[in-house]
Image (cartoon, rainbow, N blue to C red; front, side, top):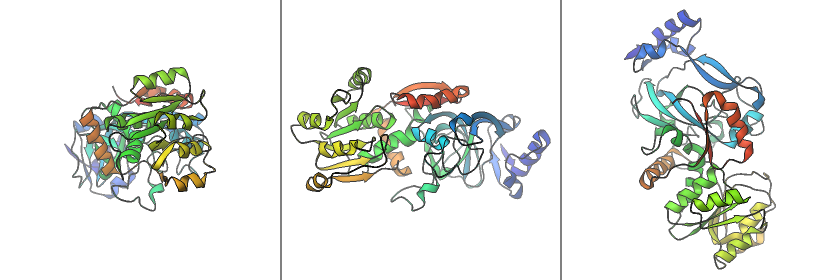
Length: 381
């Protein structure tokens, strides 16, 4: 069913005294909806937003249903997963400022296409799709202005019942995953994939270190295992150590018992060290990663849970020809390769807990509790 944008504006003004998308009145863009008027009769949706800086200001609000413009699609959100950056964005400690208020948080979403704007060629109504964090990075080197185009900050996020996204910033969902599972992929799994498999791909039999049991690290564990690598995981506490062993980690080092964990890595690998390390802690931990790295090894710098600053020991870095590689998620082509890999190897994302949409505040609070895997908010059953 095709509906002219002017008709939508007239309909909503009559029903609610406002427009769904004011710019739609100045165009002749058409939209296609299954059971069109059934969708439009509500005219509004629910979304989580903040009207002031700080996660304590997160509230559930009613907002106009968004309308897709040229090259855009309307998505009924099925699930959203959270990353720690989402909490940092809300608290104002990651970006210089939240661009515009009220602001909808979160970047990682999976859902169903229910509407399309003009000139959309990559998707059709009914397609299951997943969001791409960097909305303008399709392939190749990252654009110079990449930082301006991240979903969930600086761009508005996806923690809503419906979102409109450009067709070149989404991709088809992995066929073996549900929306809840697929929502975990855009940042955590793509970051791990980009560090392990893009550039110089991980080889069977190599040794990988993943640090902690957050989303990126456990994604790295699963991807590296599927690629035939041996995975050493560092964590704290008996419970997480046992869970990591149950997932098939080759070695698990409890850093609360063994602070100098790099020595354990060298002992386990007969002095060879790790060929690739996912560094998520930063600070002084980077020195240990350099010690644990093999000659010619690569350390993917992914996070800075401990500190954004680090005193890097330059001599071992030079003598071992170690490469430090900054990782900022990845581009859409890599995401498409990841999706194929997940389907081929039937990888099931590791989810710590699933929250209902109305319980999003507690989902954000859970980020501070050191989850084992991903936190997901189910938007629709």
